[in-house]
Image (tube, rainbow, N blue to C red; front, side, top):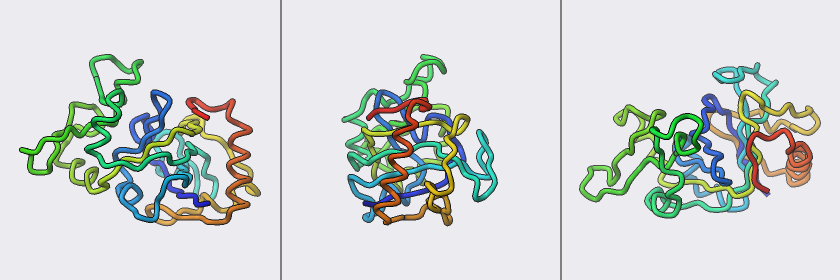
Length: 199
């Protein structure tokens, strides 16, 4: 069992995207998305950070934004076709899950990068974000997830955290099976506090 832990500095519903009963990570964190050490069945966990805009927390006091189990790791091109419900439609307004769609890269063989960016409000400056996003190569899809959100992040007791929040720059891998199982069990037992989930 493996847990991949990182800090969520911008939690907007875009990355990760918890809508339509599936949590996806299609933009941001390219090093995680392209890593050969990240496999189906691994657990992905996001924490608040001192630099979090939605819920700034001191180092060592991080709270849980979300926990998810990786179901699929698919190329960005395949994601476009397999998950059309995740394509953004900003004209439907902020109350619609389509507003937050993270499936923003439409395959186009004539484009230099092989993709065109779909209109969205989160990565509006194509030159700034496109290269970074596409360097991740893949999209992570999670069909079991517990998303609390940064504003309602779950406080985890120290004896359950077991240092999983001690993340170095980027992300950190943890491999202690029993500690991970206890952590997952705690989150599952507090799922009534989730903003979105699928179990």
